[in-house]
Length: 509
Ligand SMILES: [Zn+2]
Figure 1: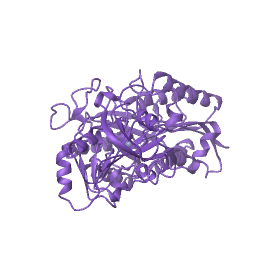
Figure 2: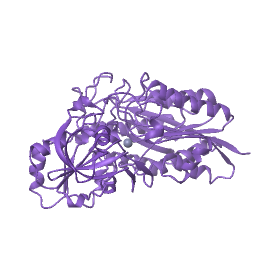
Figure 3: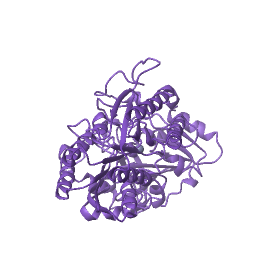
Figure 4: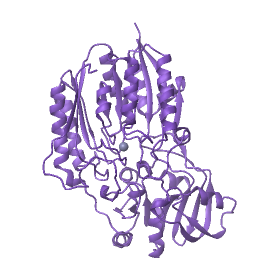
């Protein structure tokens, strides 16, 4: 008898501190929106869905039931209309294809929706209602996903990325698909436990590479997976997410073979380690003047100036010009590269010829709450349609577009002006426009993690600069309104806390 397994993805990371809402075209224009058999086109991708399909399609008795795959850039919360339209496509697709013997879904975990605190919980709850309590449902999540009680209560298996920088979307999909098939064929009875903390942490010092606090935590989870036969999966989630909802915090989630009490004990142990090291996640920030001064004391370049507060991978618009303004005011004469998203300036300048000089206003068009445009005299150096291919990361190998783009030169500064934000990874955007980071003394990077890989071989040093924006390295800079208090680091907290536990026995419902 064949096993029919439904496959779906609705994945975006949102930022509640940026202006506006993402409309119905958001997924199609910034990522992809595939339906039915189109979803199978992801089988050659590095995505979670690629991982699902690689396992399912290698099993003779499995029939893949592709529903919807929607992935978007990090960005604004979704409008109610955008979310409902995706949800409707997903649920209608499932209803048309019943019965299924299992459901695999890829989500981020920190998606925001206009009038909903927990969209992923809402989504899996709706899927559960349709398939009933006994059809296994597995959910994959980003390591920055915010886990909720509803997500745990409505699913059987939750698996998060193990790596940051993210390199294992595909493997995460594979792991969830293997566990789901075991449950769907009665070879496994997964039980789960979630331990959540009143803790929100910036991602900057939360790499799983090297020997930082999050790397140590991940290694502890790895040991549980490797040394305890009953442990099917152990995930740790570092919620430095920029969503503002009541039920939010870093968490640990363990899936065991039929033993929710053991899952709870292990998840709690991971959570307490996370809490115990909370101070190790703090980040040193410098004024631009101090960062430039310290960079000048280092021979050669590039020195990275990190505008972490405008990280497009965290949902920011990428339109901040604050760092460039400081470089101009400081009259920095060394070669500098910087980038900014500003569709208005691109449109205004598009008719001009390379080599022409003109005054221009640039920056803070999309999310004006964080600053004002900068006026400079610039020379147009290059124009392009803005397509490039990622060489690594969760979008490795895919071709994307930053829209029509320009290079403007002002003094020693070359400024890449793009029409659309793209998920950052390394220096692909600069290189696609003929800009070479190795030849610059200072390179401005709107990123808080991937630069370590992308520029790892060439950077001489990096400094986090203190400029305003919706993805700062210090969570205390953000105007949270809805998150449950007290929470670290916004409030004074006791030395020890007890994580909030949610247990899900098999089959749970
Ligand atoms: Zn992430």
